[in-house]
Image 1 (cartoon, rainbow, N blue to C red):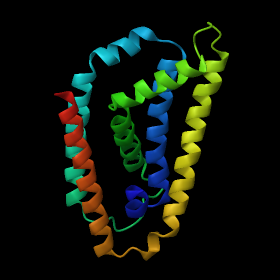
Image 2 (image 1 turned 120 degrees about the horizontal axis):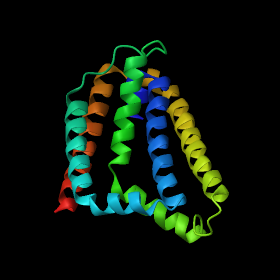
Image 3 (image 1 turned 120 degrees about the vertical axis):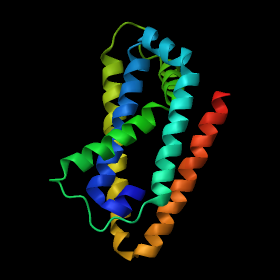
Image 4 (image 1 turned 45 degrees about the vertical axis):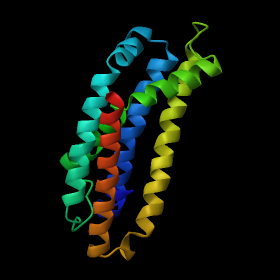
Length: 177
């Protein structure tokens, strides 16, 4: 939401696609029963939590100090959009709770246990499409209110978002202990 408010609908949606892509990666790991990769991620969850926590601390500090963007990101600003996508993808992929949630949900649904991966493929596609549609709707909804936010309000939004992200970073580091 913060990116949609500060940079516009396209940036918010592309950021959401980063989260949707990470969800699809974890959904694939859980749905296709890639136990080697799943076990590797779980075995290294402490390092992933530390890395994710440090990334969150960095992103939170950057957000807290950031001045509101002057204009929306244009479709021709590919580098900025790639940065938005990549940072959200990294933020989501370093959350080990996500893989645990997908494993639990997919196991509960019986996906990937029969050897027929059609169900898993459909479910993973559904996860990606559903997540992407959610981010699309959210970025459109938030962008409708964007014009009502002045620079001082946006500065406060950046500071609030930064403080929340730093809090999650500290929580991630704490959980690694």
